[in-house]
Image (cartoon, rainbow, N blue to C red; front, side, top):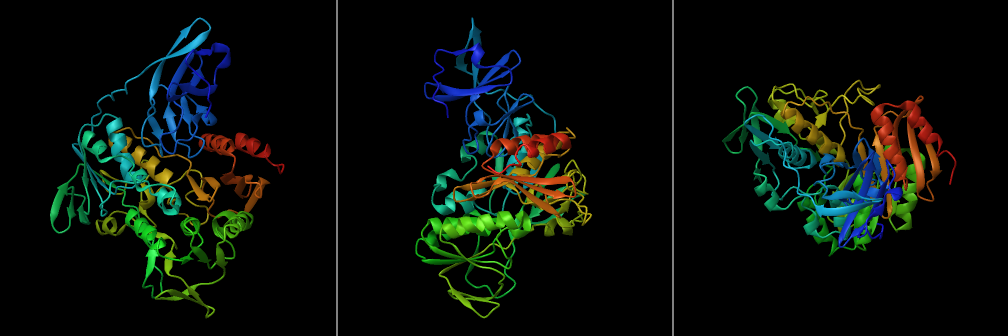
Amino acid sequence: MSDRDLTNGVPITDLRDGEMLAGSLGEDQILLARLGDEVYAVAATCTHYSGPLAEGALVNGTVRCPWHHACFDLRTGAVLRAPAPAPLARWQVERRGDRYFIGGKLEPETPTPSAGPENVVIVGMGAAGINVAVTLRAEGYGGRIVMISRETDLPYDKPNLSKDYLAGHAPAEWLPVHPREYYDEQHIELRFGAVVSSIDTAAKYITIEPDERLPFDALVFAAGTEPRLLPVPHEGVHYLRTRRDAERLVELAGTSKRAVVIGSGFIGLETAASLRQRGLGVTVISPDRLPLQRVMGDEVGARILAIHEAHGVAFRFSRTVTAVEAGSVLLDDGSRLEGDLIVAGIGVTPAVDVARAAGIHVEKGIVVNEYLETSAPNVWACGDIASWPDARSGPDARSGTSLRVEHWVVAGRQGQTVARNILGRRERFDAVPFFWSAHYDVTINYLGNAAGWETVEVLGSLDKNDATIVYRRGANVLAVATIGRDSVSLAAEQAMERGDVTALNALLSEHETET
């Protein structure tokens, strides 16, 4: 963050059209951005993880965070795209002579009231469900909103569970997305520990166990997924899906010395890294030859392997688990691994049983159209549970089906789209899928969806944590991953959004030479 003092203003020559600069005014960190003759002053850090917005991108009157691609309206400070949970603070800007001066802090804008259904019921309190509720209120909806969850905790930041929280770097009080007071102030009803047993789409009500009927005018499925269980005896195995799961792992890590992690996908590797940072010996079991091999290819997999091995994680590749007994894991080669903490991260399955029983179209998830509407009227689905027609990568050229992904950012953005469509906006969901994964001090940002990729190009240096990885089918770019290149990731996202193949290939060609 810049330490530039903004007390005496900024010369107009220091802020040209399309530029940003950051500085401080007393205790406030402020970002100035100029668009034509207008200059805006907003908070200088993203409301998600405090990413430095001055290192982000200005796009059509918005500013995008370089870390996780949240997007804000510069004029109003409003959140336009997840994962940001709250708008940016704003200040007045006045030009006097040849300088811009920052004035008083502006009050948040009051949303224009929006007509909509009388009551909205949201099943699920993850990223998708939260963003449906928050966006409805931000868009001026004044009707009833009820959020339902099997869990008993306030909506929380799920990506943090396997990352900083499990590693011991983030305290528990950082997990809630909003404090309880926020939901009270916004008149959002939270129903904890509630299990939906059935849905009547014709009569427009859901049944909550044991026999409570809750009517709806608009219903949103955002229930997410359940962890896939080991297909062998697995007594004593722990899974990481909820906050309670993470809290239990933190508790057990304090009394354990050696952990065995089953699975070398993103959750398995992040769990392994976090437990290693807590001082446990960690061994990862995987049926693959390399971690993340099927998702990111051999070169990236080898680099991720080197990072984890450098931190003391051991691996057993090309092995499957045949049984788990008290304090040990038996592998298919007859060997046994001892571990006083055993965690499985072998994928998830969407929670679609209730929807299927209600006659809603389900394939690999709840099938939705481009507006995220299900086959039932007045019923939407979003997040990990939804299977949607992605214009860039799906219907997939090989499977012929729509796209379903398990990304926090995608879920949040779909929730925002659903909220606007409940209010009649008819907004197509066309955001480029995005996620990030942290491995100690190395973060991978990933754009697009490369199911069925044929070639992988590494531009730059993986060893120096400065690389762009391009996934293609034929000449088509399906996905772009970056390490240490936030500006490339942001620029690639913009080109992919526009469908500008020429700009995307030109951007990538600029980074062909190894650094």
